[in-house]
Image 1 (cartoon, chains in turn yellow, blue, cyan, red):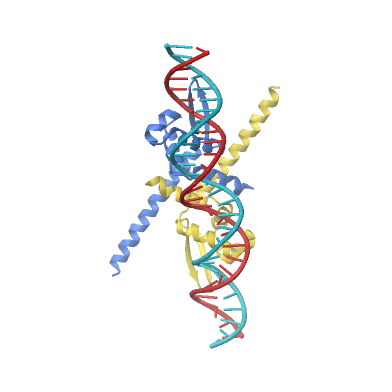
Image 2: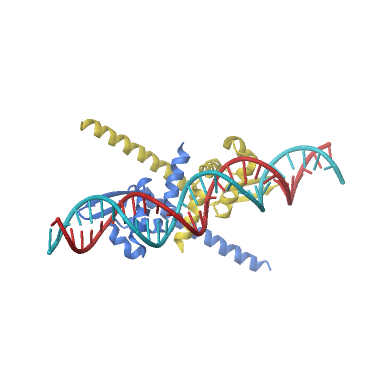
Length: 106
Length: 106
DNA sequence: AAATTATATATCAATATTCGAATATAGTAA
DNA sequence: TTACTATATTCGAATATTGATATATAATTT
């Protein structure tokens, strides 16, 4: 069923570390060692998250010598991240607006 | 942190039942009783899922007499669902292509 | 071949999510 | 008020996800 597949993809995205990884990959492909500093996490943990993203088709992998490069498998993932950012901004704006109206109505 | 908020939204989306609910709401607002038949689930369970979607800002609610109407809070959620559908289609096409190439290379 | 470097995997305890069952609430009708 | 209908909430057991630790693999350099 379509919903089950999409659920798997969404679960793959739904983790702070994995979102940060995808933000990094939006700029272009990166090897694991390049992600360690910005993520400030143990290498094993980063590899665990990358394995999940790979397993559910979010990223693809290319080995070059000792390094393993990851990149987004579909540019539409970047669009989804952008839409989510915008939704967050909209939510904050609505909250701000509601607060102002409450104050005016006092 | 931004990633934590987006993770919460993604977790709210990441469930087959909740995706089906959002597909229904893409057509327009619906009361709970209108969703029961297409979802084929117990009312209590549907309400649980709706509570999660509401809590994380995915849907909004309007009570009209005895009925409670739900609708998408932001049309960008519909865009995200559409992008996910397209990603699924792309994945299936790539798989098909890889299979064909494997067969040709035998 | 041994040492080094980059990356991956297995295990496990802590934590989170799930659904069903039972119960509660709230509006409407009799 | 009582009965009825639509919806929400609470609880608990089953299951899934998490991060840390330890270990494994694989390419490169010495």
